[in-house]
Image (cartoon, rainbow, N blue to C red; front, side, top):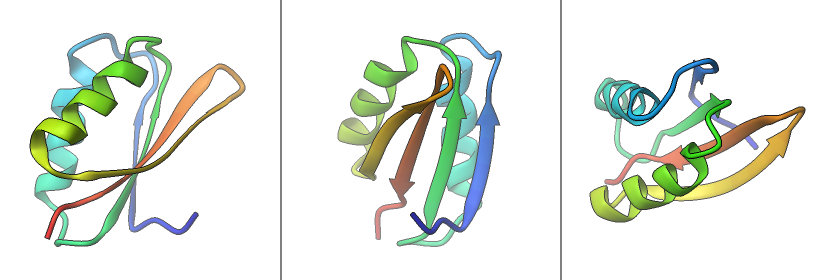
Length: 76
């Protein structure tokens, strides 16, 4: 999947992956896609809740080599 910016939250524990994802999205334009890589198992549920609460779109989620990868489109 194409993305405009990538943030690696590997090694960070809750709530830091969400806090830093929010900061990364703040620097992006509407409609741009952020790729987030996280190792915290709780990030799967956290990213789902974060995108639902903020109105951003969680385009895809998958796990690669024990890392959770999320693609989030910034709301317009």
